[in-house]
Amino acid sequence: MAIIDEKGRVFGRINLIDFTLILGVFVVAAMAYVIMAKAGKVATIPEDKTVDYTVIVKAIRPDVASFLKPGDLVKKQVTQGPIGTIKKVELKPAQEVIDTADGRMMLATSPVKKDAYVTIETKGRVGNDIIATGNEVLRVGDRFNMITKWFLGDAVIIDMSVKGDQ
Image (cartoon, rainbow, N blue to C red; front, side, top):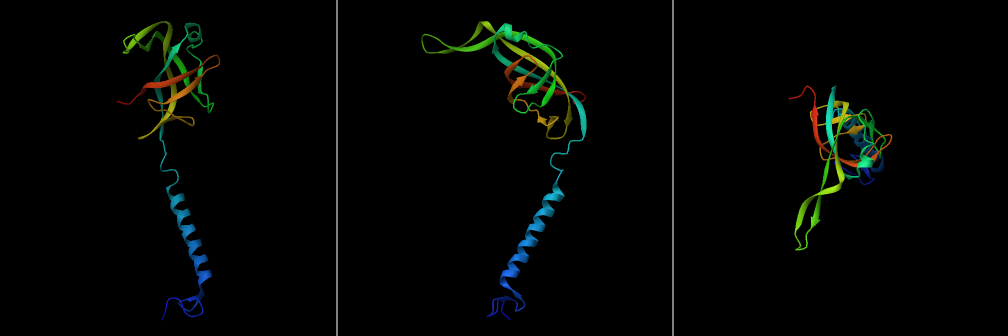
């Protein structure tokens, strides 16, 4: 017995086009089952913990830095998602790379601009591979525009700790 006979039927019983459609429905159903069976397992984050992290806002004017105040709510500009509350602001003279007359590059301290080290505290979901607060994922090295009620600046997360973790 041939797989496809002279009339185009599979095993002499079902039309080839019908067989293809039925096979397609089974493949789609199997894919949907596999996707749905794994749903929620990738980003399941079990518990809320207090997360402290430090961001640096580089080379800002001192008068602008004065608008970074403890207690202010911090958000990411793009998503407007809250990412914590300012706990501490530390201003240090900004470090800038300058070109010398002989063509070398040197690190120099700016006489005017400041680097703001801002410590932020939030409640976040802490899992094996992710730390998130609300819909925002937090990772060291993440660069974003940080906004408060009065301030907007380019920030980079440089340190992070979870209270209760070793």
